[in-house]
Image 1 (tube, rainbow, N blue to C red):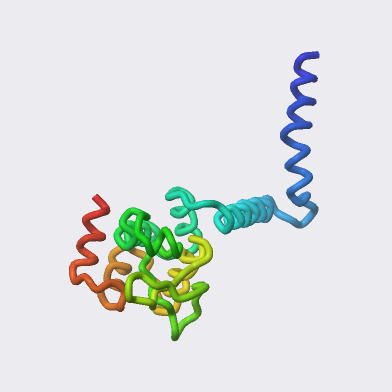
Image 2 (cartoon, rainbow, N blue to C red):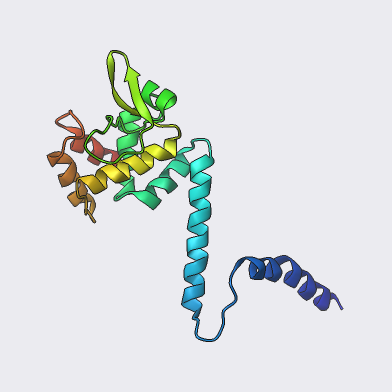
Amino acid sequence: MRVLLKLLLYTILILLPTRAIAPVITDGESYDQMLKWQENHRVNQLKQKIDTADFSQELFYQALILYVDNPEIVFNQAIIESGWFGSTLFLRHNNPFGMKYAVTRESTAAYRARIGSVRNYSGYNHWSEAVKDIALWQEYWGVRAKSQEEYYSFLKHLPYATAKNYVKILKRMET
């Protein structure tokens, strides 16, 4: 009797909610298709959470994994550019990367942000828009860097940071 109650409870709590959300596998559909649907569903839920949640470093990193090449390096870029997410540009304008306002490429920036006398930074309505913008920036410059060394080489040759030792600083952060 106890085993039947446990089985019934398991069916009600575990199996039924899953069946209500996930499509039913029919003839001709594979288990792999079901797994792909579940992964897409999980990613869409994460994207919704990212687009509405208050900032946290954990959620920020998850957003980088979803949207950009070499998220580990880009995370370190954000740390450098925002002073561990404490800069005025980040706190007031949701810009952790020090991104300038784009005039020649697509951007998610909502407005031109002013820091001191400089008014050409990107301002975002939400921190997740800055993550999407750096992904657009990578796309605009044709980033196809699959390895960290390729990405470092990319950063050396493109106009991102003004510090000559920027890549060395990023590499030191890995250890």
